[in-house]
Every structure is written in structure tokens, then in C-alpha cells.
Image (cartoon, rainbow, N blue to C red; front, side, top):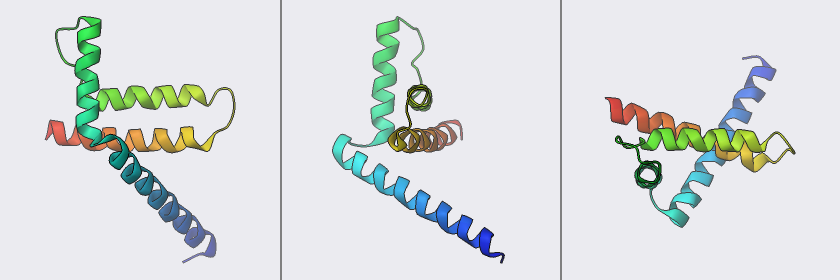
Length: 99
């Protein structure tokens, strides 16, 4: 394996582990991600007067958009970490919901 490829893979593994640890801390602090996103979707649905619930994965995607908008002003790693985690969780939720 090329040294640069090995370094890149190591960095990716470290980033994935960091994001996993963040998810674990957030779950201990706030409870299960999926059920929270679903409850937020129901609340937003009621507030907006919609007929069909906003799916939890779409709520997570909207949080991704909010985190990306925050990057317009100043760099803050937390915004990128949170966006990556929201996107990861949205992917898992949508796969689970549509299978």
C-alpha cells in the first residue's frame, strides 16, 4: 500500500471513530437519535399544519442544512462534525424506513 493511501485511510478511521464517540455522548445526553428526530418531525408537522408527518430522516437532513449554513461565517469544526453525524444518521433512518 502506498504510504499516502495508508495515511489517508488512518485519518478516515480516526474521523469515523471521533464521530462515533460524539454520537454516543449525544445519545447519552439527549436519548435515542431516531426517536428524537421522529418526535421533532411530528411537532414540526403540527406547527406547519401539514397533513403528513415530516419523516425523522428529513428532520436530520434539515439539521445538516442548518449546520452547513453556519459555515458561511467562520470555521468551527463542530459544525462539520455535527453535519456529518446528522447525515450519517439520516442515511441509516431512511434506509431502515424504506426497506
